[in-house]
Structure formats: C-alpha cells, structure tokens
Length: 163
Image 1: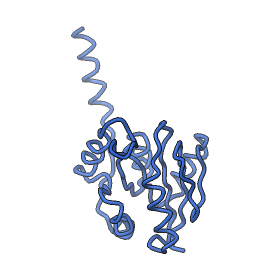
Image 2 (image 1 turned 90 degrees about the vertical axis):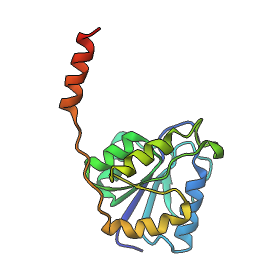
Image 3 (image 1 turned 180 degrees about the vertical axis):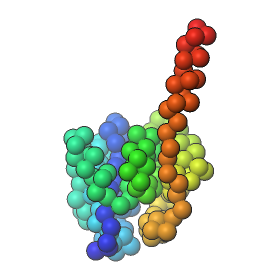
Image 4 (image 1 turned 45 degrees about the vertical axis):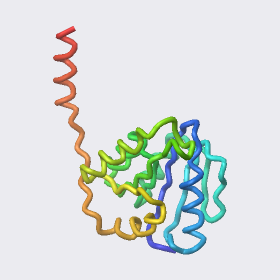
C-alpha cells in the first residue's frame, strides 16, 4: 500500500457516478493506485471490489474522513471542494458529465475548470490520467482557499439597501 489515504466523496445527489468508481476499482486492483482508498458512493449502483466504501456517511463520519485523508477525489460539488480546501487537502475533481447520465447538464465541468484555473484543485478530464494526478499531487502547487466573507457581506448589504 501507498503511504497516503484517498477519500472518494461522491455526494448525495440522485445521480450515479459509476464511471469514476469503476475506474478507481480497476486502478486499485491493477496497482496503479497503491494508496488506501475509501469511498462514499452515494446513489451509484456500482459496488467497488478493491476498496472499502459506504453509500452514505453521517456528517461526523464525513468530516472525519476529510480530516484524515491526504487526497480527496470528488465530483465538482462545491461543498466537498471547499471542505477539503479548509483542511488543506489536495482535491482532485472529476466532473460528472451529462452524456454518461451523471447529471442533467455539464455545470460541474464549468465548476471544475474554474477551481482548476485558480489553482485550487487538480482537474481530471480523462480518467486514464487519474493515477498520474495522484502521483503528482505530492508536489502540486495548489493554493489555499481564502473565503472572502467580508466582501460578500458588504455587497449583500448594498444589494439589500438598493431593493
């Protein structure tokens, strides 16, 4: 086994993400991924054979996996991305795509591209690249996410005043 822990977080959406789970399962079995993997698979129908998983986690379990892992592989769910960044984790984003029945549209592609452009996450466009991204994540130059709550509050107050 590798020396790191990977947490695959697929959220609670009604859509499956079997494509990602099958790819990771194959890569673990084929030893392309040597790190320990645990996945929260949500409503995916595919059941991994080469690593442990749970369909859903309590908020406490979810937070514990976020804190203990070294790498998060996730769909482009903003909540999971920001939670991972909060704990300074390497986040690899694999957007759900509508052509595979993983979502109704490709907004996750736009989210992933935006986060990747800002160097907050590594984006995986092709699942064959995933083992390389995991390997490169040790030396990735990702930046920390700094929430801009004060600026948001000022803008929100102005918007409310102008109603």
